[in-house]
Length: 327
Image 1 (cartoon, rainbow, N blue to C red):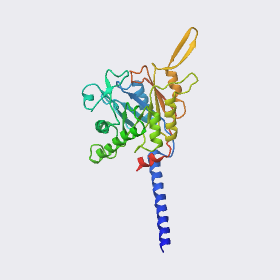
Image 2: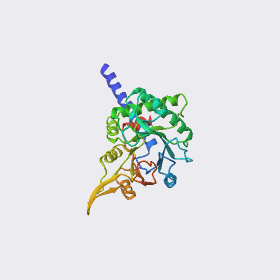
Image 3: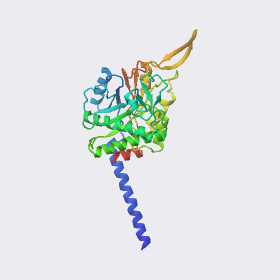
Image 4: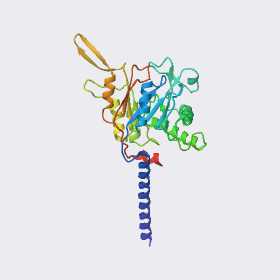
């Protein structure tokens, strides 16, 4: 009798497991489609409004049925948003702006880079610091929720997370995701709004966090800045890691290029020649495997691309985060 009951319980458990697996798969198919890839169009500006030509390209891409991402700093006026355009809002993240912004944090230190005249760095591994940043993120998501078209995703672009390791990234973004869930429960953000975050630079740590399943939800997409090609057409190491994330997890990967970056050096005639990242190189990058697109700006202080080169379609893959997102 006992053996029969145990066998019955095992059969029921297996059946329930199968039902849950099928339900997760069906939810995944409903949310992400039947594995058919879509091209992604990324319009962005963090220093001014988005370049008119790039913005027009976004509208045209969305009209063709492709996925549109508008990535902007909320300090600047938003352009009119049409249906199908997802809204990503910038936050300085692991830095703070010198003055009242930095004074909110327990401590800050010089950045030691070209942004040191206007920014200082803060420690996102400190729970007290994360709490302040998370509150900022929830507030800009709340603003984005009011501005974004119905059905659009609202996400955050958290900058300066390159100093964090995998566990630090997970702590930062999981705190944010939990705070968004709380804001939905108390009505500050619409219950039906899909909210997420993007992965900015630091691809090795993001890959480790994904591989170890540390995140409550996967990034909406990955950006890798200062992307370059060598003379043989090979991407820099960080961009190749980002490629691997795109291939392994079906996450769109966008490369950010700057005309002021040296791609490689070559000896010609009397001396060494610096070869800078060109618009042609950027178009070439976009055509590489597992790259959704590449954007080119004249220089690194001008975070306002004037060229976006669209890559291939992104084919979603099955992995645990998809089931979590579909719950």
